[in-house]
Image (tube, rainbow, N blue to C red; front, side):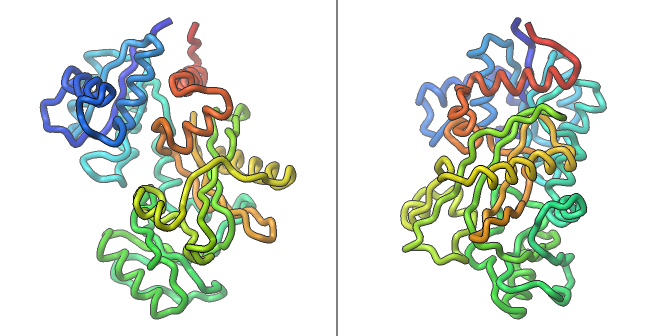
Length: 351
């Protein structure tokens, strides 16, 4: 049975763009009439839902909460697919849209405000994870205007990151520091560039694995593992990190021999450990419907959880969608699965 589904997202397009303008943009991008590397994520989601027979409404936001409330109340969707990765141009406000949807009593796809806020704060989430026995790198945090505290028992090298960014924003080769002087310099850089606290954590050498998860409560499906692979001839161990360039810059990836692929074989017991850790993290961080965990598999076989992403990138052709496809879900089928997962959680059924 078709549903009325609103796709909510933060948009760079001018104020006044409504559903019709976004549909035209989406159709032009898919038809190749506009030269873009790939259609934007919210358009891919909407296009797939439309292919599945749903009545879609594209709701792009530019920081106007009144617009969100008004259009939700006017159109009365049966479900909202939350594709917002921030609010008003501020990624740290990605919890705002689901907060409004919660207040309106609207069923939506995606994690709740609490899950988004806790998982986004790298220091807080690590404390919660460690409390539940999950191995996380040792770390220190440093607020803007403060010098780094004494590193105590931490072992260099450390990797310095902005506390509350995602998609590897603020992470570069210079993020890996080998002494106190370099640590202070990088922390000051993070404070200046991002106007937020910095976190410095022990660098864990090993394989970078991405664990995509769908479901809720006790019904969590772990999709096939994907892996960020580095050419060992072109990248030293401490250079094998998911910098922004390593994730998103195709020219850099080609030069350094970096690629995303399905994970090389992992021992059965290790796979079981990875799945247990990620299921536990999903629950204790209040994640919902779908998420991704980034883990490091160290040479000694230890599994370290680097972070959990409550709002991962789900565009076709990227890790999450690739993992779903390997499990047997085409992209439209993946979107339908997420819709049904949210409906089931909300106590609805979809015939």
